[in-house]
Structure formats: structure tokens, C-alpha cells
Image 1 (cartoon, rainbow, N blue to C red):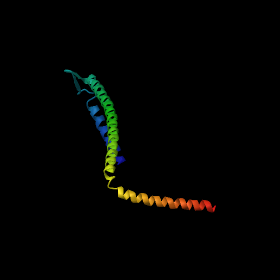
Image 2 (cartoon, rainbow, N blue to C red; image 1 turned 135 degrees about the vertical axis):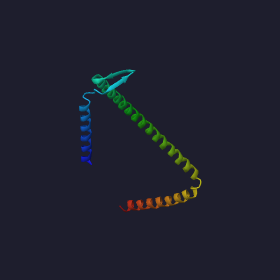
Image 3 (tube, one colour; image 1 turned 60 degrees about the vertical axis):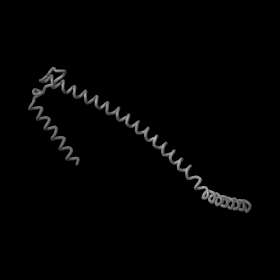
Image 4 (cartoon, rainbow, N blue to C red; image 1 turned 135 degrees about the horizontal axis):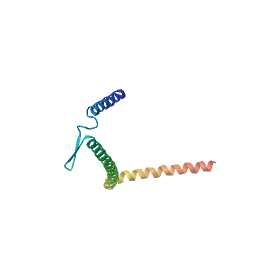
Length: 128
């Protein structure tokens, strides 16, 4: 895969070099700016500068949009977590009357287990 990428880049650079030699420094190149046509080396230079400036502006805009989308998704993620917490709380509140008998049984079992644990600790403390 790495060799294929290197060969592809070399082939593209060779095509660009032959195209440059064929049209030496933009003799067949012209740029239209506000109705004025610039050709020859000046047109080539103007075209390269304008294209580079456009690419630079595009890169800056792309970075700004990426930052804003990241902030947007972070805010939406926090909102989603809050909504899920509220939904979980609402479901727990709706189920609490139905779970009261189970909670009473669990409380009684927990009380007796705690009581027997306290007795064991008291017996261990008395034995020492």
C-alpha cells in the first residue's frame, strides 16, 4: 500500500512536470478577474496567488467550522445526559409505589443482618 501511494505521487508529479514543460510557465494560461483577462506568466502568477489565497481562506473557515461543530456536539451531549437523567428520575418516581412491598422486605432483611453483625462484633470485642 505504501509503495502504491509513493508510485502514484511520483506519477502525478511527472505528469505535472511534463505539463509545465509543455506550457512553459503558463503561456497558454489566462485568468479572468472582473472582466479583465490576464495571460502569460502574469496570468499564471495571478492565478496561483489567487488560488493559494482561496485555499488559505477555505482552510481557516474549515477550522472555525470544526471548532463550532465540536462545541455544538458537546452541548448537545450534555443536554442529552441531562434529559436521560430526568427520564430515569421520572421512571423511578413512577415505579416507587409499585416497589414499596419489595422495599419493605429488603429493609427487614437488612435490619436483621445488621443486628446479627452487631452481635458478632460485640462477642468478638468481649472475647478479646
